[in-house]
Image (tube, rainbow, N blue to C red; front, side, top):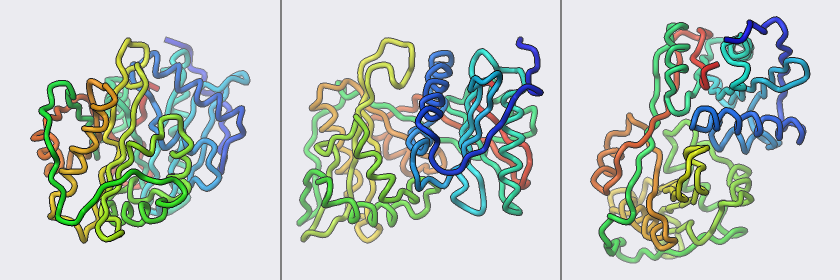
Length: 327
């Protein structure tokens, strides 16, 4: 176990985009942690927010001897809670780096009276559980990853509601209409419902973005819902392991005024058909464990639970919160 280096840790807090070199250092740190743990420590949104001018975040960087050894991103976009993701270099764990980041995260959270700190632990690693238990933290949310074997999936012809047609997303034309429907469809959702136009444009610039796999359902020119798919390169879901590319049902959203038509089920099927047409053998999706209706729907479609991310937190504002990656 490394000696305690907490006294040597220099912490900096930055609002707004990180300089390019600092953002690259965070990505490199995340890659090292993913290779060691078999699961990425930072999800897609924090990685995109490293360089995003409009991101409502605070970046915490932990340096030892001029080297980045830990990083935490605090989503401070709401007044009720700070949502954090954190990573510590595998060579500097159990040495006080995670504790230093957590202490600073709590201080930033306390800027707003009554605000609580919530920390995601990707992969639900044993080290994260132990750390959370030591801090008397409980799991307050679970995000399930579900997986389906596309090669074993029976072919079907999705039935669309009368008058509904489906076409591919057109960049430069459909952004605002999609964002409005997405906000309505996910008004209850703490992350997806907050997606901005800038967030959408940032994803359009990602290497994986393919408008052919972003399908919009319309009736009389009015957008009712959509299914957005994504393809993960080989090994991206389990770094360091040999794997085939994996598809994802990235977002399925239906306007509340179009609920009850079976459109969500039909769009999901169309998304899976698209991923299968690319020759992919499997597809995943993410859904909250609390959304039992969605979980059961996906299970009926052949999905099984394959992984889980957990969020640690406390009902008491400004209490210590769990930390991920065995920090």
